Length: 219
Ligand code: AMP
Image (tube, rainbow, N blue to C red; front, side):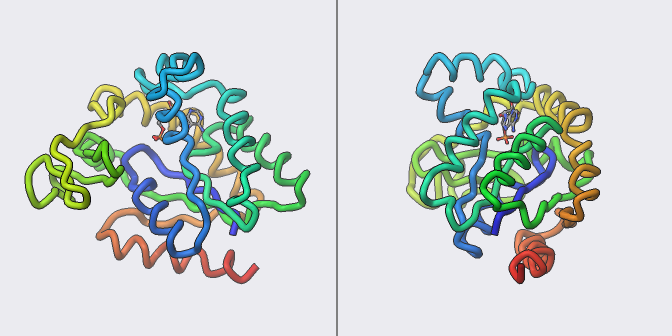
Protein backbone atom coordinates (compact mmCIF):
# COMPACT_ATOMS: atom_id res chain seq x y z
CA UNK A 1 0.00 0.00 0.00
CA UNK A 2 1.13 3.53 -0.76
CA UNK A 3 -0.33 5.84 1.84
CA UNK A 4 -0.14 9.38 3.13
CA UNK A 5 -1.06 10.25 6.70
CA UNK A 6 -2.35 13.75 7.43
CA UNK A 7 -3.07 15.09 10.90
CA UNK A 8 -2.32 18.08 13.06
CA UNK A 9 0.55 18.13 15.59
CA UNK A 10 -0.58 16.05 18.57
CA UNK A 11 -3.25 14.16 16.62
CA UNK A 12 -1.57 10.81 17.37
CA UNK A 13 -0.29 10.34 13.82
CA UNK A 14 3.18 9.20 14.92
CA UNK A 15 1.79 6.53 17.26
CA UNK A 16 -0.73 5.27 14.71
CA UNK A 17 1.96 5.23 11.99
CA UNK A 18 3.84 2.63 14.00
CA UNK A 19 0.67 0.55 14.14
CA UNK A 20 0.14 0.82 10.35
CA UNK A 21 3.80 -0.06 9.75
CA UNK A 22 3.39 -3.34 11.65
CA UNK A 23 -0.13 -4.18 10.54
CA UNK A 24 0.51 -3.71 6.81
CA UNK A 25 4.29 -4.45 6.72
CA UNK A 26 5.21 -1.17 5.07
CA UNK A 27 7.82 1.33 6.27
CA UNK A 28 6.46 4.42 8.00
CA UNK A 29 8.53 7.34 6.79
CA UNK A 30 8.36 10.35 9.08
CA UNK A 31 9.88 13.49 7.61
CA UNK A 32 9.92 14.91 11.15
CA UNK A 33 12.13 11.97 12.26
CA UNK A 34 14.42 12.38 9.22
CA UNK A 35 14.74 16.09 9.97
CA UNK A 36 15.39 15.49 13.68
CA UNK A 37 18.04 12.92 12.70
CA UNK A 38 19.89 15.53 10.61
CA UNK A 39 19.61 18.04 13.46
CA UNK A 40 21.04 15.52 15.93
CA UNK A 41 23.98 14.81 13.65
CA UNK A 42 24.59 18.55 13.47
CA UNK A 43 25.13 18.48 9.70
CA UNK A 44 25.01 21.87 7.87
CA UNK A 45 21.55 20.88 6.62
CA UNK A 46 20.59 19.95 10.19
CA UNK A 47 21.58 23.41 11.42
CA UNK A 48 19.38 24.95 8.72
CA UNK A 49 16.48 22.62 9.60
CA UNK A 50 16.71 23.63 13.25
CA UNK A 51 16.22 27.30 12.41
CA UNK A 52 12.72 26.33 11.19
CA UNK A 53 11.67 23.49 13.52
CA UNK A 54 12.62 25.36 16.72
CA UNK A 55 9.98 28.00 15.99
CA UNK A 56 7.36 25.60 14.65
CA UNK A 57 7.78 26.71 11.03
CA UNK A 58 7.81 24.35 8.06
CA UNK A 59 11.14 23.54 6.42
CA UNK A 60 11.31 24.83 2.78
CA UNK A 61 9.64 22.51 0.26
CA UNK A 62 12.69 21.79 -1.91
CA UNK A 63 14.72 20.53 1.08
CA UNK A 64 11.97 18.20 2.32
CA UNK A 65 11.15 16.91 -1.15
CA UNK A 66 14.84 16.04 -1.66
CA UNK A 67 15.00 13.93 1.52
CA UNK A 68 11.74 12.16 0.65
CA UNK A 69 12.90 11.35 -2.90
CA UNK A 70 16.06 9.82 -1.48
CA UNK A 71 14.16 7.81 1.12
CA UNK A 72 11.53 6.52 -1.35
CA UNK A 73 14.35 5.24 -3.55
CA UNK A 74 15.41 2.76 -0.87
CA UNK A 75 14.74 -0.94 -1.26
CA UNK A 76 12.20 -1.25 1.58
CA UNK A 77 9.78 1.16 -0.16
CA UNK A 78 9.39 -1.04 -3.23
CA UNK A 79 6.24 -2.74 -1.96
CA UNK A 80 4.66 0.32 -0.40
CA UNK A 81 5.10 2.97 2.27
CA UNK A 82 3.31 5.28 4.64
CA UNK A 83 4.34 8.92 4.54
CA UNK A 84 3.86 10.46 7.97
CA UNK A 85 4.09 14.26 7.88
CA UNK A 86 4.65 14.57 4.14
CA UNK A 87 3.35 16.29 2.10
CA UNK A 88 2.53 19.34 4.18
CA UNK A 89 2.03 21.91 1.42
CA UNK A 90 0.41 21.89 -2.02
CA UNK A 91 3.81 22.17 -3.83
CA UNK A 92 5.02 19.11 -1.86
CA UNK A 93 1.84 17.20 -2.82
CA UNK A 94 2.32 18.09 -6.49
CA UNK A 95 5.98 17.01 -6.33
CA UNK A 96 4.96 13.68 -4.75
CA UNK A 97 2.25 13.12 -7.34
CA UNK A 98 4.79 13.66 -10.14
CA UNK A 99 7.43 11.41 -8.58
CA UNK A 100 4.93 8.56 -8.11
CA UNK A 101 3.39 9.08 -11.57
CA UNK A 102 6.86 8.69 -13.10
CA UNK A 103 7.12 5.32 -11.38
CA UNK A 104 3.57 4.30 -12.31
CA UNK A 105 2.84 3.84 -8.61
CA UNK A 106 0.18 6.35 -7.54
CA UNK A 107 -1.06 6.82 -3.98
CA UNK A 108 -3.89 4.55 -2.90
CA UNK A 109 -5.20 6.40 0.12
CA UNK A 110 -4.71 9.52 2.22
CA UNK A 111 -5.77 9.16 5.84
CA UNK A 112 -6.68 12.33 7.70
CA UNK A 113 -6.69 11.87 11.48
CA UNK A 114 -9.18 14.30 12.98
CA UNK A 115 -8.74 15.68 16.50
CA UNK A 116 -10.31 18.98 17.69
CA UNK A 117 -7.82 21.84 18.16
CA UNK A 118 -8.60 22.18 21.87
CA UNK A 119 -7.18 18.69 22.56
CA UNK A 120 -4.01 19.09 20.50
CA UNK A 121 -1.90 21.31 22.75
CA UNK A 122 -2.44 19.10 25.80
CA UNK A 123 -1.63 15.98 23.78
CA UNK A 124 1.55 17.40 22.22
CA UNK A 125 2.74 19.23 25.33
CA UNK A 126 2.55 16.08 27.50
CA UNK A 127 4.47 13.83 25.10
CA UNK A 128 7.72 12.32 26.29
CA UNK A 129 10.23 10.24 24.37
CA UNK A 130 12.90 7.76 25.31
CA UNK A 131 16.27 8.77 23.86
CA UNK A 132 17.41 5.12 24.04
CA UNK A 133 14.77 3.09 22.18
CA UNK A 134 12.51 5.84 20.82
CA UNK A 135 9.40 4.72 22.75
CA UNK A 136 6.82 7.42 23.32
CA UNK A 137 4.76 8.20 26.42
CA UNK A 138 2.37 10.85 27.64
CA UNK A 139 2.48 12.28 31.15
CA UNK A 140 -1.32 12.05 31.44
CA UNK A 141 -2.67 9.62 28.84
CA UNK A 142 0.13 7.00 28.61
CA UNK A 143 2.40 7.53 31.60
CA UNK A 144 5.34 5.15 32.13
CA UNK A 145 4.89 2.80 35.12
CA UNK A 146 7.86 4.40 36.89
CA UNK A 147 8.01 8.17 36.59
CA UNK A 148 10.43 9.47 33.96
CA UNK A 149 11.65 5.94 33.14
CA UNK A 150 11.21 4.04 29.89
CA UNK A 151 9.02 0.93 30.31
CA UNK A 152 10.73 -0.75 27.36
CA UNK A 153 14.49 -0.27 27.86
CA UNK A 154 14.68 1.10 31.42
CA UNK A 155 16.43 4.34 30.48
CA UNK A 156 15.88 7.04 33.09
CA UNK A 157 15.22 10.55 31.82
CA UNK A 158 12.51 10.79 29.19
CA UNK A 159 12.66 13.96 27.14
CA UNK A 160 10.20 16.39 25.63
CA UNK A 161 10.60 17.42 22.00
CA UNK A 162 11.73 21.02 21.85
CA UNK A 163 8.88 21.84 19.47
CA UNK A 164 6.27 20.29 21.82
CA UNK A 165 6.57 23.30 24.13
CA UNK A 166 3.15 24.95 24.38
CA UNK A 167 4.18 28.16 22.55
CA UNK A 168 5.74 26.26 19.63
CA UNK A 169 2.81 23.81 19.34
CA UNK A 170 0.55 26.83 18.71
CA UNK A 171 2.79 27.96 15.84
CA UNK A 172 2.79 24.42 14.37
CA UNK A 173 -1.01 24.25 14.46
CA UNK A 174 -1.12 27.65 12.73
CA UNK A 175 1.26 26.38 10.01
CA UNK A 176 -0.99 23.36 9.56
CA UNK A 177 -4.14 25.45 9.25
CA UNK A 178 -2.68 27.78 6.63
CA UNK A 179 -0.36 25.50 4.62
CA UNK A 180 -1.37 21.87 5.18
CA UNK A 181 -5.19 22.06 5.49
CA UNK A 182 -5.55 22.84 1.73
CA UNK A 183 -4.30 19.29 1.06
CA UNK A 184 -7.63 17.96 2.31
CA UNK A 185 -9.37 19.46 -0.74
CA UNK A 186 -6.47 18.47 -3.01
CA UNK A 187 -6.83 14.79 -2.08
CA UNK A 188 -10.65 14.84 -1.84
CA UNK A 189 -10.72 15.99 -5.50
CA UNK A 190 -8.60 12.96 -6.39
CA UNK A 191 -10.95 10.70 -4.43
CA UNK A 192 -8.16 9.54 -2.14
CA UNK A 193 -9.22 11.07 1.17
CA UNK A 194 -10.30 8.89 4.11
CA UNK A 195 -11.18 10.78 7.29
CA UNK A 196 -10.61 9.01 10.61
CA UNK A 197 -11.89 10.20 13.99
CA UNK A 198 -8.75 10.41 16.17
CA UNK A 199 -10.54 10.86 19.50
CA UNK A 200 -10.81 7.81 21.76
CA UNK A 201 -8.62 4.96 22.90
CA UNK A 202 -5.60 3.81 20.92
CA UNK A 203 -7.42 0.60 19.97
CA UNK A 204 -10.59 2.42 18.89
CA UNK A 205 -8.56 4.61 16.55
CA UNK A 206 -6.64 1.58 15.23
CA UNK A 207 -9.92 -0.14 14.39
CA UNK A 208 -11.17 2.95 12.56
CA UNK A 209 -7.93 3.06 10.58
CA UNK A 210 -8.33 -0.60 9.62
CA UNK A 211 -11.86 0.12 8.42
CA UNK A 212 -10.74 3.17 6.43
CA UNK A 213 -7.98 1.17 4.72
CA UNK A 214 -10.14 -1.72 3.53
CA UNK A 215 -10.67 -0.24 0.02
CA UNK A 216 -6.92 0.56 -0.34
CA UNK A 217 -5.90 -2.96 0.69
CA UNK A 218 -8.19 -4.40 -2.03
CA UNK A 219 -6.61 -2.26 -4.80
P1 AMP B 1 6.67 16.29 12.88
O1 AMP B 1 7.53 15.37 13.66
O2 AMP B 1 6.01 15.63 11.70
O3 AMP B 1 5.68 17.03 13.73
O4 AMP B 1 7.65 17.40 12.25
C1 AMP B 1 8.45 18.21 13.08
C2 AMP B 1 8.89 19.44 12.31
O5 AMP B 1 9.70 19.06 11.18
C3 AMP B 1 7.77 20.29 11.71
O6 AMP B 1 7.21 21.19 12.65
C4 AMP B 1 8.50 21.00 10.59
O7 AMP B 1 9.31 22.06 11.08
C5 AMP B 1 9.43 19.92 10.08
N1 AMP B 1 8.78 19.11 9.01
C6 AMP B 1 8.44 17.79 9.07
N2 AMP B 1 7.87 17.39 7.92
C7 AMP B 1 7.85 18.48 7.11
C8 AMP B 1 7.37 18.72 5.79
N3 AMP B 1 6.78 17.76 5.07
N4 AMP B 1 7.51 19.98 5.29
C9 AMP B 1 8.11 20.96 5.99
N5 AMP B 1 8.56 20.81 7.24
C10 AMP B 1 8.44 19.58 7.81
